[in-house]
Image (cartoon, rainbow, N blue to C red):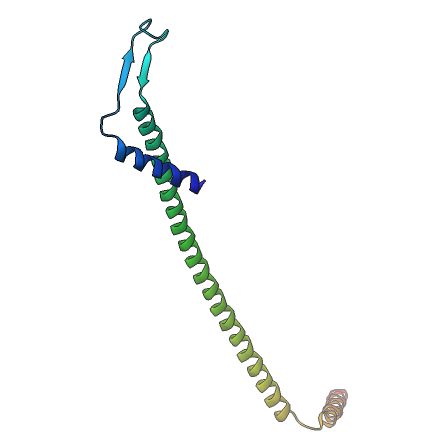
Length: 143
């Protein structure tokens, strides 16, 4: 397709360079030398019209491709920025989670250090004291 457009462009340039006399056309009335009304063009005029059409189509294709490339570059730029932003936010989130995990481990270690080593003794002592105090209140109220 591109080769075809390029050849048409070369044809147009070569025709316009060799055309020394202007293109000719004639308007016919009905039943003049032709059996219908219309416009007749000579070869140079027809070649110019066809080459102008091909040139306009080629120019339109070039502009369209250029605009599409601009849109693609803008899209790629925005996509790249979004990927960078996503990676930065993911890294920030991961760092935040790691920091919270460290904080949890530090608090758990400090809780283990401050907890008494003989928990069962404190439990048994609490049960004995609670039972004794309950019995004492019972005796005091019944006497």
